[in-house]
Length: 139
Image 1: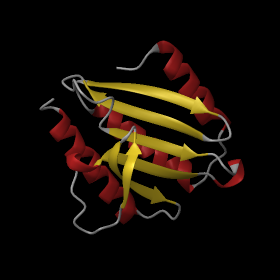
Image 2: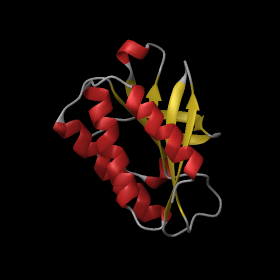
Image 3: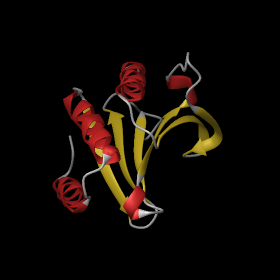
Image 4: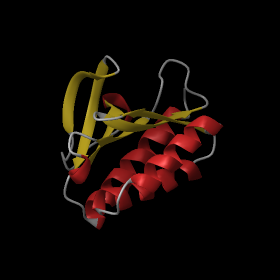
């Protein structure tokens, strides 16, 4: 599911991140990813830029992930989340995401920025994660 080194880096990151709404949302999204069967998870820290939690379904062959949850670190006192998907793996009925042409590992993607947090916004993102996960199962 996740390598020993990645889990250690993730735990250290969370331990040193002071409590805030972004941290709580990140932890909820992390729990969801860890609950999904057949999923490999990686953690890529880039201090001062972002801390990236990436999930890939084991059936996926042509893509590196189905979701990328970035903690944007341009201001460590005021971090926020950007949750991104390949454009063809989700729907965005409420048009809450931003289309990023070629912006997700060279392919079109949708990113949902969480700089203000609500249960409604978090639920909407969780539904997109489940949608992308279900689509990723098909390869």
